[in-house]
Figure: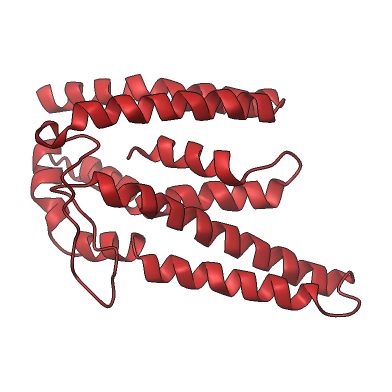
Length: 210
């Protein structure tokens, strides 16, 4: 799925007005599995590598495949989520946990937990929609990849139908989040997320033709 869809799904599931730290953790977790792709893209641009070579050849070589495996590991994000939950729940049970030190630990645990959970949701929605470009979701224990019959972009794997479903899901998420958050700057970024469903495909067409 597209990165902005992951952001919208996690925001829909976990964000709440007034929970700034938690909301930031959710958004970071939602984009974290794709973070290396943005670095890879900038690196390719800096090197002057054509897009078809960058994604068709360079992407499948190391260190990029190792970074991809690390960024998409269910085990790593699961560990983060469990660690965060453990810290949060442990300090919540301590008598006098409202003192400044214990509150800081609890907030930190909450942040790490939601970051990990949000990243896991990202992987859960990626798993059934990657065909030829499937990730190593079970790194570092297994190199196995699930090559799904469905793809969020490959035409030979019903990419057109998946894209339509993804856009409908995104529209629903944006409308619900518009009602949830009255803040103008949040609504602005929701509109930006919506325009990416047109802007990103246009960019890829232009860059491929160029």
